[in-house]
Image (cartoon, rainbow, N blue to C red; front, side):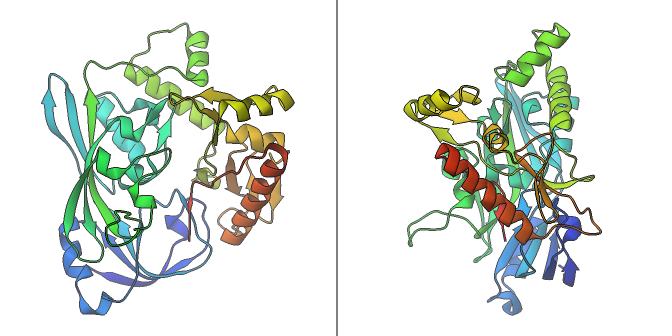
Amino acid sequence: MLVENNVSLQPYNSFGIVARAQQLVRVRNGADLPALLGAPEWAATPRFVLGGGSNLVLTGDIKALVLKVEIPGRRLVEETHKGWLVEAGAGENWHDFVAWTLAQGWPGLENLALIPGTVGATPVQNIGAYGVELQDRFHSLDAIELDAGRPFTLDAAQCGFGYRDSVFKHERAGDSGFGLAGRALITRVRFWLPKPWKPVLGYLDLERKMAETGNSMPDAQTLFDWVVAIRRAKLPDPAVIGNAGSFFKNPTVTPEQCADIIARDPKVVHYPMADGSIKLAAGWLIDACGWKGKSVGHAGVYEKQALVLVNRGGRENPCTGGEVMTLAKAIQTSVYERFGIRLEPEPVVI
């Protein structure tokens, strides 16, 4: 595997932040990784796994060996009367993969359309949108230990999925701990798409689409098209305006906390959860604090969606990671002072 030196990472992060990797390897075949990881010259070098760079804030150059995941491949593993088992290489573009499954007649991922990034990053973040989370469709994944170079497989239970969370986002706690942050590279992911297909429609934006179109029973392709249209209307295209998508997680509170906030701000956007908690719309909280359209240096809050931080300087005069995080921390302070809610960032900060 070819090791490239002093590589610009600006094309490989959706914010368009300027940073460099001292060494970078393009991983196109997981089978080649053990030899690289076992090479004496890299034994003491930290490793950093890079997917599509769509959930990343770079605050400086990366001294670790950057493993850029570009593993391709899409296939139907198995079809039964209960559903389809579909696999994709970790380097596949997520949205393109979703579109491909629908084109093959295998629905189930349509609510997750147009989420940026690669297939390999989806279980790390447990991506979710419009009533569906990745864990609802996840089957298993293959990965490689970055220390020992050994391959392993995880099922859904072993991934420890939570809201925008998984075992891949947690440090190992002691010798018996199973946290995999910084310890694994995902090579392939498999998804279970059940039969018969049932649309997931219990979301306000989708209910509006049903009312607008008069279509209360959309098929999977229609639902896909609706999700794409909704996201394009709300969220900036990273190819045009650099960003990392939703910057903060939607916080969850107790019914009592929600009632207290509603008493002060009756218009707060909130959603009851199955476990009895209440999810608040982080974008609404940020907007209520007056941040929409504001900037710190070349980092700004998107005018159409306060949940998204953007690079106002373009590729020629891009924002820095420091500007992004200064803006993020100022937003967190405002929301906490007004609502008593601590917003948690979604992107990985390096």
